[in-house]
Length: 290
Image 1 (cartoon, rainbow, N blue to C red):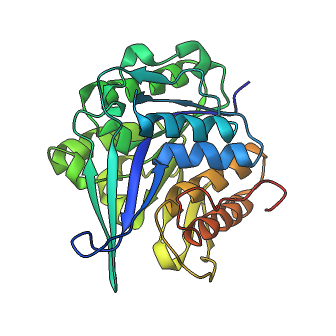
Image 2 (image 1 turned 90 degrees about the horizontal axis):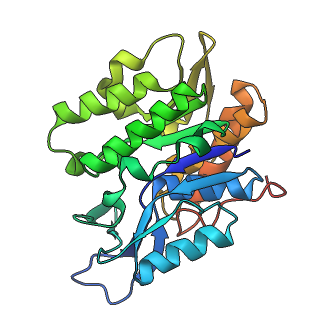
Image 3 (image 1 turned 180 degrees about the vertical axis):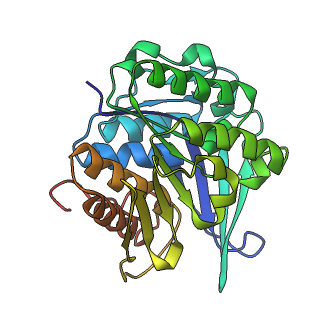
């Protein structure tokens, strides 16, 4: 049985200083579900990933990384004639990362409901989806809905990370409608402090809600109780991937049957590991390293 089934868009990512002045850059592959799948696999969980990549070098690299990390890629698809999407991350002194998306018409956006394996999701312990994949276009959004419906019908636990990226949505109103709908379908909800207003209808006492409070740490409301954890004081190299790593740690502890405080603790550990690395996922620990 698969522990966690997830679907998303693998991306190339180029990281550098300000491009107009920089002569060096770093190439990697990333994506929130990509990072989460690798994090869970390193902790010994059986994780399956569904997505589309192009028949190009970035697509080949993404598949190579997932296979090498032990993630099940049986359902991955290669889209002929498309391109694997790309992110450009520019670091600025004293400022947040400037992120530019090159994803229009990408292979990942071609994910469709017909690609979703209903039986495999039904045989999993948990489905994890994000609002970022739902923002890629109508087909990808319907694929996320199809996966959620399959999980709900099979009584599989549903985990949802809001992952709101404004530039990927036509309007805030549409984002609120779709993200709110998916949040209400979830059993476990991950979101940042600034995303609370987007999914207000889902913030009910019955739902397990995990809030990333940035430098202040994180909190969870579970079983009508609130628990908090402080962030680890570690040297920060790059904050990209921290949220997905936290979610992976929390989910891992939940799968292991740990209590909410222990879930937060493991999430914080993985988040700390992520920010001390230049990569979203390369610095994440194995089970023995926890």
